[in-house]
Image (cartoon, rainbow over all chains, first blue to last red):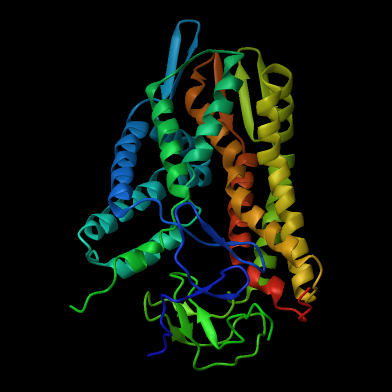
Length: 205
Length: 217
């Protein structure tokens, strides 16, 4: 075997310094003594708690995508849109690149991330590795920074302020769902998903 | 060997995908900065184990230069057209910020200015500095450079802000002849700039910062 007791050593991703792993107390974060990058943090959330968060995020995500985000009014006329309205509008207006970008970073990647996590955690709850655990964990890693729902919330805020000077602006439920989604994403941002490799060990099967 | 041994000195190699630390059997233990051709797969996740990201300098330079080329039309060309009954108004990124400052809220104007102008420029300067200093094996301000890289990674994707604003306004402001918003080519170039700078910062390997002549403080 080419491995040397995987659980005992830790290598800083940002500078390659090797550390001996030690258990962290609640709230502790291990940082690299050479470059200052974060090595590892205490897992405050159990698999069950993460699963609950993901399920909540899925429900909120459906709402954020179904409900209109904001309504504009101009001399009696009204106009509102959902996320897919935005994607289709950009496609029609010959900004297909932007349309694809919006669809990927605000719909498909977040959706994939939630579905992958939901699947992995559902089995992880029972202490089992989900079918396809290894390739799915790698896919989850590759999704990396390409989900941008939180940027969209700020963008919606800017759009509302810009439109405010010319139109009557009414925020719709979708924007609140997006705000809630951002909150959930922020909680999740502190979770190192690599812990699943250790928490759901391979079993001789 | 210093008090803080590095993976290469101990003949170890860490998987960049799952974090597993493996013993590095084949391959050249010498650090050449551009990855050793170990055709070894991680026993846990199956990804190829590499000492450094492959061709990190060449790829990062290429993506950064491409991003910079895109950034010029992104700023020069208008990103959005506002058409009303008697008036057509084309906005660039800068004029959008100015308008927000004058008519709306200065606070948001600062946020948009930061996301659309400061962050991309900071990324060009920061990644350029990191590339040049690491290629020279410079020992200058290593800890600060490492922090700079982490900052670039953290804030990079917030530049998409303006793209989302234009997209949302396009979908919302459609009152036939009274008022219309259309996206203009600038926004496409700007979107591409953001994606390319994100790819550039992902392809840079921060471990290269520490690979030069060893001047361990």
